Image 1 (cartoon, each protein chain N blue to C red):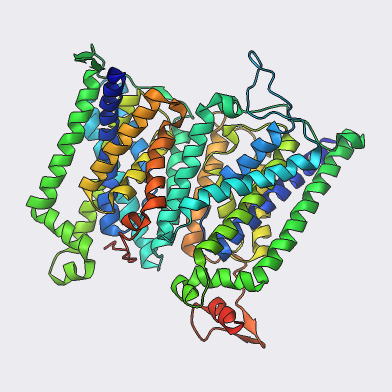
Image 2: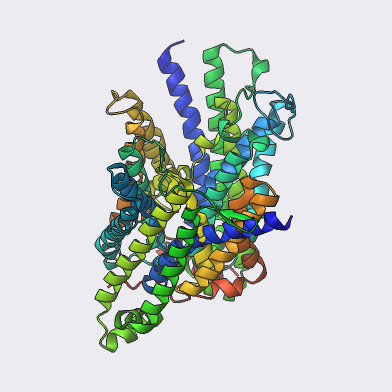
Length: 335
Length: 296
């Protein structure tokens, strides 16, 4: 099989996984204003659960990797469990992090969750094999008896199918009455409370839905690459997706897909073709520096992104009479 | 049993001194400028590397302390007064400013990774025979670290209460507009605050690596959870609150290490903040209700 076909199909899987992440973060941050700086933790929860529920029981003392709750579950079950794990962890973290507080406090608390979770999983070896992580996660769809190339493209297609389905569902949700209520909360929380919206519950709803999508994306990814370790989910990984959304356009799903294509897919994958410069790993560091610069510069020059959020329109007239609160007006008008 | 507890508490106080130095700098700057500054972890590492470079070129470890403080000071002034002020001038609000500091922090961290070739370096200075205090055995380094923490706390309280600039700082933290109307040169106060908090941050970085005996580009970031948790728990802008919260966190962290699973020690320190967020959110969250940035 040609190397190109293999490489492109791999990129398609990564793109699908990152679209899931982008959709999840855009729902949470772009619509509801919840800045989930611990996103990667929920993705990892899904990945670890998908791994341990397919790896089979831990072979005991002397095994090369140790973990909790080993089982051989059939394929779609492990993926569903991954999504549930993401949702459950999000519910747990949401209990203390989604209280009504200054949004910068909230961001800091979630960033700390990300740092602390990484330290715990790295240090607690019996949990998920510590810093070495889990390897040898079995490939699903094995019963299809495909050639290597066929398998690659089958998995890529399956990933894109899941990503497209989630994209359509979440976009519909965002355009519903509930989605308008989310934007009302984001823009004017006091006013949203006044018209009877329970903002803490709404934040919890988006957090858990986003957590389920995160867990799903982690399960999808780990069963493709076959391994997962703390090296894969540093706190900075979350920032890649945020940068993609800042570049593409906050609150606009097409912008999110564009950003995901530009940042994690093109920008972070193309440097593989560059000749090595400096010491091994220098290109890696430079990529992260560029992500930080892109993040900072897009906040400076174009906070709304390439494709900005569309204003709500009623009867062909944009609702901009109350500056900054079009979503609130749209919500109130339908009650 | 009791000996284990006493040792854990003693180590907790040592750790608390390090958290407190960082948390005092964080909270003073946060209380005054209202910027939740997430470049803080990266700047701690910058301070640590300044000391590491000095010592590896033959300087005494004592020189590492002022050098680290100076490096932290200059970096923080450049980032705060040089960069963040421009963002504020373009209309960046409180929350977006936190996101901006996160992006800058990423640049700082990975620039350090590039410069250090992603290596972790040993940093063993001030090693000498341990001291026996009854059943508790501590190293002279730990005693020095605790003394530095205590000295900084007392010095800072004196600065804030007795000097003109300290009083100006407190006045501006309470109400920037009123302070300006009273003729306080707020721009100078802001510059002074960036320098002061940067110095404490750099110093905390040096003390942290002296205690942990190694430094890598993530050193500051790994320590950041306890620092921010202590600063939020202690209340924005209150050094004594930060010190109390740090003591609590240091002791809880070390007691969990001694009796339970050491992997969960930092999580237990952070758990304190979680418990407070769950049970008495008002105690933490109503502080800092003011949503205006004060950067000049």
